[in-house]
Image (cartoon, rainbow, N blue to C red):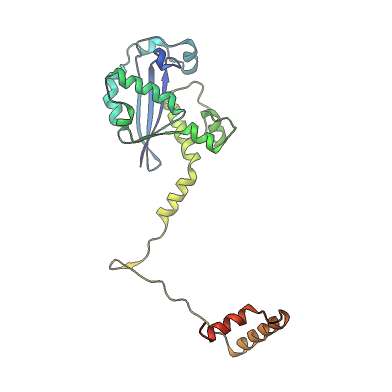
Length: 239
């Protein structure tokens, strides 16, 4: 299974008011293992970032002036995410911005490029109801080292989210690994080989006599209601 862990940084919080994507960071998981195949771009949003947003990501307007527009890297981005499951923390936020960027570039919506979207914030709330489930809180909960995260950055946050996601769903991974590691049945010519028959040790005459004596004691103490003797009677009588 191919999954893409994705994060964005933006000029502000509201795509409907014209805020734009300024950074996209993605990394690839193949069968739940990082492949080292990253996708990362800073983007010129063609507008200034809000002061509050700059305090979060620390990316200046001047730094973005010579960076490509989204439409210039759109085909590369679409090819990277094609047919993969996207893993995003607070997915509705990032998806709304990506949908806007695709629309401005006159390209089909996200659903036509990726297989599905998994929201790790929703997953975390289901696993830890009533607790803080920000990326920083989840890093602390799952012992993911985020000491180097002083500002938000799309690629850094995607890397942290990948570790958090794998930790949150480790039970699934363990199950898959157990199934993968289970020894295959021995076969000869494609036909399963039966296991060796178990050796059955028959009871001796003395053991059978002792068993019968115990059953008679139970029959006497239970006033004729010894189930084992009743069953033996049914078997002997063919019932």
